Amino acid sequence: MRFHTYSKFSPEMADAVDLQSLLDKLADFLLQSGFASGEQGSYYGMGFDEPGDRSLDALRQAILEALMESGQFTREMLEALRGGGDEEAQAKLAKLLDDLVQRLITEGYLNLETPPQMPGAHQPLEGKGSVAQAAARDVNFSLTGKGIDFLGYKTLRGLLGSLGKSSFGSHDTPYLATGIESDGWSKPYEFGDVLNIDVNETLKASMIRTGEIGVPLDLEYSDLMVRQAEYRSSCATVLMLDCSHSMILYGEDRFTPAKKVALALTHLIRTQFPGDSIKVVLFHDSAEEIPLATLASAQVGPYHTNTAEGLKLARRLLMAQKKDMRQIIMITDGKPSALTMPDGQIYKNSFGLDLVVIEKTLQEVAACRKSGIMINTFMLARDRALVEFVKRMSEISRGKAYFTSTMTLGQFILMDFLKRKTRKVS
Image 1 (tube, rainbow, N blue to C red):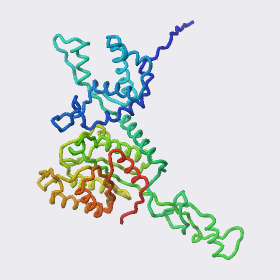
Image 2 (image 1 turned 30 degrees about the vertical axis):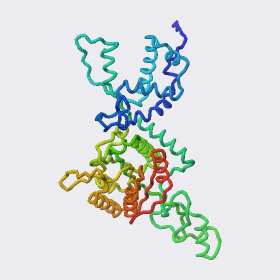
Image 3 (image 1 turned 180 degrees about the vertical axis):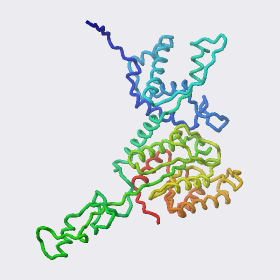
Image 4 (image 1 turned 90 degrees about the vertical axis):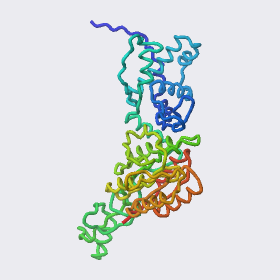
């Protein structure tokens, strides 16, 4: 006979932490855009050329701050903190943070990238100056697809909660088509229509034609009437994110909120509008498309704003999409200050609103309009000259312009995306 010995279960302190709530609190840190990268709160681009710290040590410190902010410390955790700085208390706290990092990795939210470690001739394995301590500084973390998807979902849920009730579905247009939902009047059946028969109207047509009611019914092809439903269209979207130097200047990080909105919009389109597509374009001195998987780690820089190049790239990406609607959502806070010349050189004017740059930018706006692409612009600044430029751009593209802040950016974008009425452009 087999015997089993049972002992009292002793849960680890890390098991008491709500991992998803912790990850939500870590969102700003995980999506850092180069705003505060120095130890003294210095700003990326102002004397420092390094991106935000993504080391294991920085992650542990961020977890500790998130736990304190969210109030998730249990009695055991507080006792570990109140240990007076002795080695046992520090060891408990270090184990808690290590266990939480391991949980984030085990559940698939984070990845660790470890460079090869070669210990010195007399370098200890543990303690100060050890291989383990050096590894904590050198090991970098990155968000996995699951982690990016979770942050997108949390951001989207928060934004929709601030908007009130919003109905999900396909994009509305003024056109009618035969389908399942009956939203319009009936029409005679034509070859290719969905056989969503309107029985009452079909019988009525038969009686008008024959002038009698009898069984069996005398039905002809011309008597068939089908119900019409709202035509649901697919949409291709390019999200243009300004990552020029101004997006982290003036004591405010504007790029991280823009990335959050991009993640939320991506999650919304993938889960609720499966026929749609979304691509992300970063524009600065030039412009490039980035995979959605790398959006979370995107950083600010270089310095200038090449809006024309961003529009040109976005238009090329959209024209390759066979969708009913095409649109550009552009998030920016600055005036166009750079232009790609025919020889590939970048012409720059840091003061902005250079006549040559403005002319070429508006030409790209007109090209988008000619291609049936709507441009909706979300401005994070209210400079008078910038407002006038955005007005001209909106008039040409027949799009919309929103002057918003980092606090309301996501609300405006989702309201525009979910509630707008768009027609086909022939």
